[in-house]
Length: 247
Figure 1: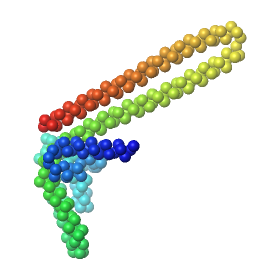
Figure 2: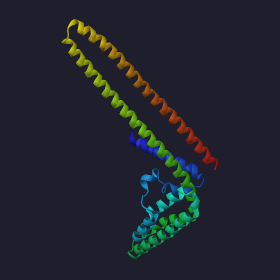
Figure 3: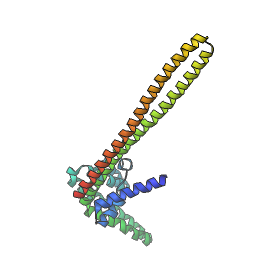
Figure 4: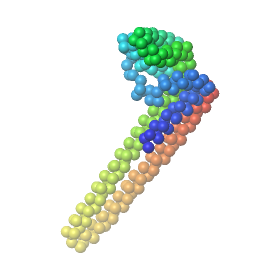
């Protein structure tokens, strides 16, 4: 079951990215290995400047690149600045790869050195197409963040439903214990007292049924509200999809 859910999620991401990239297969191929389904979980929380400093020390620039694309996607008004950052990171990454390639060639590991050519080509592509990358990433991540908010809302409502079910079971158990306790008490009573106690029990049982009916109506209303929310989310998704196609 979990595997099927993961496959469905990957297919959904792929379809969205294909929609955004259109016939640009090179852009799609690059971004399919670059963008994240859950960016808030996958991308470092560190400031971009800190990640760049760490990358310059280690020679590993991927976290900084991911952060730059994510931030740039969320700040379209600063597009030029983030394009420059991405191009600068691409240039530094190419330099680090070329140094690694040169080292491998000196060690006679020509096959491994040759394999680094693809990584250099990817960085050159990123530098050349930085604006297109940010444009697609902006729409992609915007959709992913909305989906996350919707998911968080569904999870919260599902937890509320579970809590309500547990509370309902607790109340029923308590009512059952109270009924049993009253039965035991009636056995000790005289005839007249038992008669009055039974009348009181019937009144209590009616009150219990009324409270139960009220809780059941609350549960049904929560289910109806969940369906209404689902319909509204679907309408908004379709509206966003239409807007992306118009853009």
